[in-house]
Image (cartoon, rainbow, N blue to C red):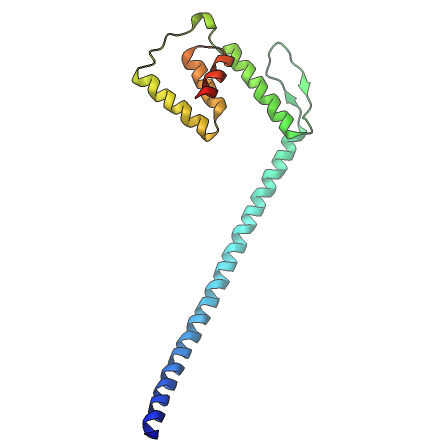
Length: 160
């Protein structure tokens, strides 16, 4: 009986030893793979850091250079704003004013069949643009399509 129990213990010990050796080589292989991954990560992070540095320096140069207003009647140089949000708002306001000037006057408002497939497709597109946060684009496209002024287009898009 003692020999039988000792035999089972030897068998389990042998299996345990083989599995431990296999596990040792598996862990060794994983550590080599981690080193490869670490080297790859360091290489890519250097590239990203370089590109980010170039992007930041370009943005700083753009911020420092004076900007010329695109109005042909008034050619003056505007110095960049300290606050980037103010500059973006000013740019959006100027672009909106230019588009309003280009828009078709309310007297030539187009008659559109609202039951047509074309109008339904465009209406769906404007709804999607509004849902995705592209409200300005939806307003501009509706304004162009309908031939109305900016305020009417804003009102329509907001009601969608």
